[in-house]
Length: 203
Image 1 (cartoon, rainbow, N blue to C red):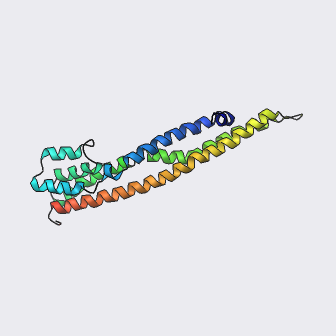
Image 2 (cartoon, helix red, strand yellow):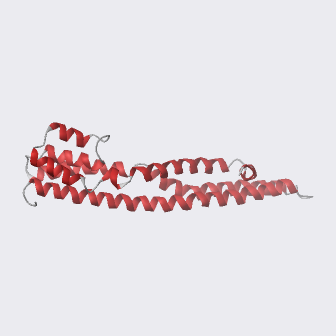
Image 3 (spheres, rainbow, N blue to C red):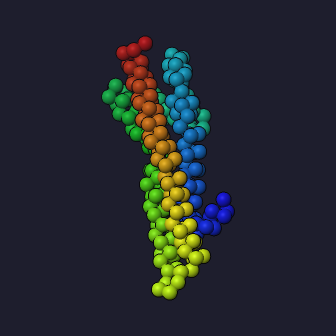
């Protein structure tokens, strides 16, 4: 691997930096977008059961604490704070909390998408650098084989590495976008159920 980096020249370091950032984001999002951390199916029944016994400020505080409750807990807490208000007021409070939760789910995805977009461009930049080295090795009288070979290596390795980084990044970016959309829909459905239960429209 070190030999490839040396052959690819200094432009490869920009691609390596982008790949390290992308790997960190992918690992963090794989951990953070788990259903058990966002919208577990068993939380709503627990909240409904606690409502029957009487919701206390401690319950609301626990639900809104991201260290003690899944992400959807903050949405439930916003609704329960306005449980004695009209259906519209409670729904608006839930929607505001839901927008904040959706923004949290999308964290770092723009960065991952940007890396997927620019990685081939970084490879193209390395290719151009390699072509410059190739042409600089050519003279009217002769050509320097060592410089010529190095220029070809720079051009080809950077192009390949740019694609190697871009393709997985794009795949994970699209996967995470789909995952976020599914989780947002699940949170919306559970929040609607809570509103209907609170206002006696559903058992």
